Image (cartoon, rainbow, N blue to C red; front, side, top):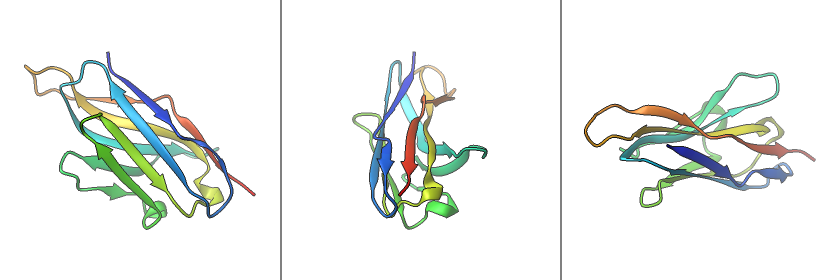
Length: 122
């Protein structure tokens, strides 16, 4: 019932910028947390940034000062502005959301997008 769809990935040169978007749709009552994770070739999936309903953002150490996460609650959409990109930022970026779907229950479940490729290369 819930889908997360990412967009905005692509190929850029080092020091350039990219903006990712992820829209959640379906049977949504509330979105507790949205965020981004990534997986580089040969690596495990790692946290990029998360933004809970409190708006208290958290970033992975490797992207602090370069990436900015934000959200539009009216659209159930999360964004990731990526500046000063480095080759080591290359990987598949996955949208994440923790979503409550039932107005009668406090239960919230994790959802993942299909991923969008980001390649930083010269």
